[in-house]
Length: 111
Length: 113
Image (cartoon, rainbow over all chains, first blue to last red; front, side, top):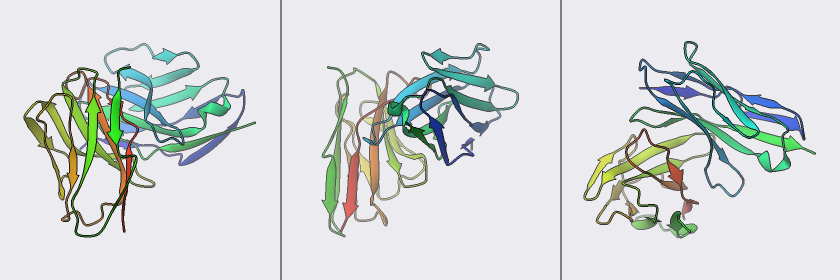
């Protein structure tokens, strides 16, 4: 079964700084999808960014971008110009007809 | 407004009782999912349905049951057979199957007294 590993249980960053959250996954498939979801204290899961494995170009959404390294099975999330509202749990997920989530990284943005 | 609603937000149950969690979506999505979230863990799939009147077990289906009589609704029943039901439950939906992006409801916190 595919597994998703987030090796950083907790991270913190100063407001306006940049932070990178790590994610690795295990799969033997060639085509799949990767996601980052944000879960703020309200516990609503919010889609941050999506990457399709067959696309070499890294996905970006405003201040959020990914570094997708298919050969290394790595999918890190970079948050630029961190804001207080970015404080949340961040979950990496792998999807190929079987959605798998990592255990999450708790990010705290400090003023 | 299009979206996914879950009710109630908080639910308390006595041991030995069955309880049903509601999930409704007006996104016209075909697929719906139920996940369980425990502290320190990611989401784990309980059940999913890709079409009305059909559903499949996920990784942790034991002690749970679902129905999909309408496209918009996918209720989850936590039965007395579920040994440790206290958790946060999230419902999601997607346009088609698993490869489509899943969108989540606000969740239900179930506590067994």
